[in-house]
Amino acid sequence: MKNEKLSYKKTLSADAKLIIALLRKQPQTRDALCKVSKISVSTFYRNIPLLKGLGKIKETEGGFALWSYIELEKDIENVLATLDADSITVNRIASMVGVHPSDFEPLIYRIAKKYGMEVRVDKGEKIVARIVEGKVIF
Image (cartoon, rainbow, N blue to C red):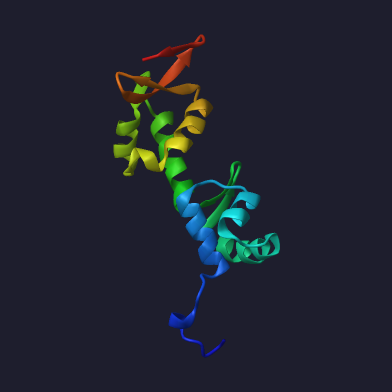
């Protein structure tokens, strides 16, 4: 195996499988990652310290995510925390953080809730708006 050429490998390594699974969906629990990556729980625990140590994967309250996801979460939180209006479009947030809206759609719902906001659709466009006295303000 030591002298084996990479071109002869038939499968990806476990760490590569974990990263690919997280590229498809973030965050994911340990069990979901093992299932999607088709690796055992013991293999997961052998590989996670390496990936965490390299800063490639972090554990969040929702499960495991790639470092870029964590940075994106912080960027979105900064936008909402400094928002001086009652609402902002999801497309505007996307342009401010430099990603496509579909790349953070599940994340925006959780972050909006954290800031007392809600995601609504108005005239076909997704908007993050403040909730005041139980009513969404546009």
